[in-house]
Length: 229
Ligand SMILES: [Zn+2]
Image 1 (cartoon, helix red, strand yellow):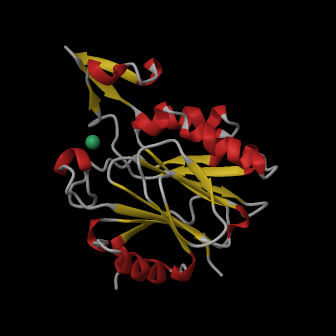
Image 2 (cartoon, rainbow, N blue to C red):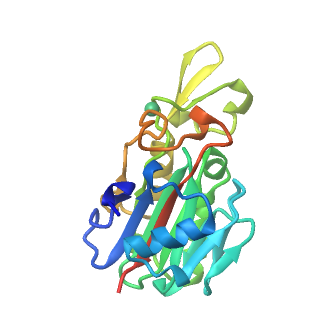
């Protein structure tokens, strides 16, 4: 199989042996067995995958055994022995890596999650392991960008006014990546350790699925994160 079916961000930080991958449209992952095949293909042991049932919440769970978990939008695996997975189509996949302790995490951050403080909750949980967010690297993967993410007055109050601008009557463009970047820095992750992929899932219609472009029946991209050995 060809490597073109995923984006590989494994070398974006000075980290050895981490795999940070993001499936694209061509990967065509539709069912659990597709994800298992994809994981093995990118070099991550599919026996160790953590799956969560995402609900656009700010729930972050700390997981020590592989398998399926309910009602969460963030995962932390202390020590990084497992493989974190989430699925997205426009929402921000945020990858977290601590190169000292090897702890890893993945967050599915849509505007609801950002509004409800999912990044803060992630940091609160990290503190329970006595880890420092300043030791972390964070990557914001492909997601809907300010060119295409538009909102109306009905939800405006959920957004931080520093990260939207009005473009017409009852129309605003939001920069979710800047909002997330700001929250990551607020919890203590150094700007130099944060990378933002400015690829728009809505614009790049031949590469990515987009919920806003195609509706609820659209496919999903999968973010996988783990240490290879
Ligand atoms: Zn766009």
